[in-house]
Length: 494
View 1 (spheres, rainbow, N blue to C red):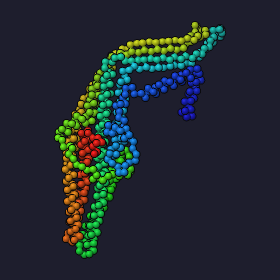
View 2 (view 1 turned 180 degrees about the vertical axis):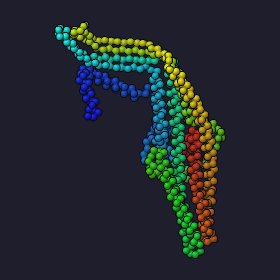
View 3 (view 1 turned 180 degrees about the horizontal axis):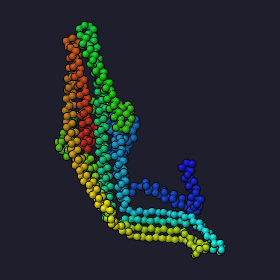
View 4 (view 1 turned 30 degrees about the vertical axis):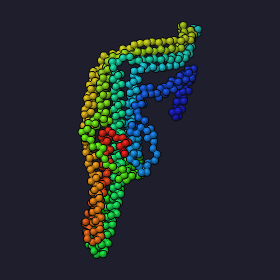
């Protein structure tokens, strides 16, 4: 017998035991259930307004941002960022925490309203008395009693406990919202860094293919000279060794590229084997000086505006409100209570007499005063604990401020270095190209040696990798500093 059969049997048994009120009670239960389901779907206190429509938050207010088609060919940085902000597990977790805390605010506001409960009891009673010597006194009764009731309870005054609880919930909501913003900043910076790293790995792989091709050409040229007897066999061996090394580096670069693509796909909550295609690393590189303001000014700005600082401050205020709430919970409270009920319990004048239909009513109102007298000293320790938590949050603010300042400082210095190296790497690559071409011409003309050619090729390979790294570092450093300042947005991608 399955679960549904058990439930059906239970209903049938109840219908047999209580044949008369079953349909009426079922109707009442159905109405109450429907009313309850409607009430649970309501947002009377409009807490949903505190929640962004998507996990991307204000980074991308468009509601359709989290609906994506197939991955772009090639994948642009903007699409990668949008997918990560919407689908990354960190942003979604932070978003859900905001929902949880918004509901907690609603619960705290609901404490100001009365609670109303409706109940109903159906009783089927059969009784009989058999008097052998006096059959006239024998009796047999069967009664069905229905007792509906409604009760109300309303806390009128509690010495600030509800106020402190609401402030605590409100500040925790503000902290959750700030944490969501900080998480968006972190994920934004992380996905852009991984995107640029994947672009750099792609460029390094392409450069390694060119270097391998060039090394192969040098090996073939050296072998031709050896075959003609105008160069020693050591030239061909050294060139072949350089070619083998270039082949090794190309294979490693391809593996690094695939790993970088897998990390980027994971940021967007895609499978690592999604087969992403990216634009060339040189596309859109325009070094600027938009962050040439005083680093001291930037640090001061971040200490006031960064979401992590706002979160820490909100956590401190919530902890302070928790102290007041804990103290108030140990104070007296005044409540209003009311109850009304009725029943159809029949009455009988005496034993053996027939029962007569009757209706009973009962109602009451009361003012209740609850005064906690002794709680085993638990309240004092609870207050001490709450104060210690507030003190801990004050330390957390100082720690967050120090970390924010250090992050801005290191990111600022990294950006200054990366901006300079973009120009330096371009000049270095230009010189390396010219040197390699000259050494190759000299070797083919018979006036150069193999070591000069191989050294120039090695220098060119290093220059190409440094150029790619400089471009990747500059792009990542620019957005990393924006993230440390708490100023990242979709406009930062331009």
